[in-house]
Image (cartoon, rainbow, N blue to C red; front, side, top):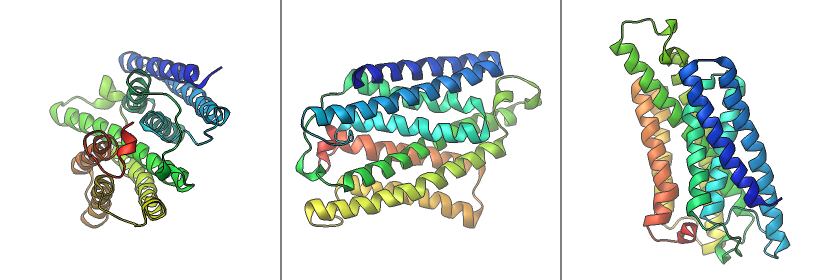
Length: 284
């Protein structure tokens, strides 16, 4: 068994999980929703094995580094962290419908990695030859994943809030929106996901600064990646500040969460693909 085969199986599992979640939206059958979650869990298990195999394969060919060294490996790891955060929320809150809005993020990441990116294992560039690689990348991507979950939940919130405003029907009586958790629960999940992601992003920025000093001799150089990381940090800091001091909840919080995740995606992918700088190795 190879990591490549396991990553293909992972992509298949996430795709079937997403389809099953869509069937759950149509049928409102709780057993179907449970099946969607179990398929996502199975995909996470296979993906965990695949990442471990790829790490071993790196040692087998003489490179010996964690599978976090290029765009392909980072996208695969991003999808893994999304499902990991989703698993935590699913086990704690058991609102199956959230899977229909979160699993597609992981599926899109895996599909892009498998179909559009170079999957070869290559030696580390000098800047990546540091133990800070693990600390920085893992904390950043766990933070990104929490923001992805918050974005999915925020989309649910806006759909539900719009439906409640435009319909005089009791949403708890049935219909697609009857599957959604109450808006206060969705708003709370958005807040809790960001409360998970924000400290992780903060640690990621700090470890990144330490790594930059090790690799390039300076803690901060206003490289595009560093600048956009700071922009993302300020957006989510503003989210939390507004919630604590101004009582921002509901639609404004949901929109700010979506804006924050768009900025996160640009920080992660846009900077790598469209801007040049010290992190240009991340585009390969």
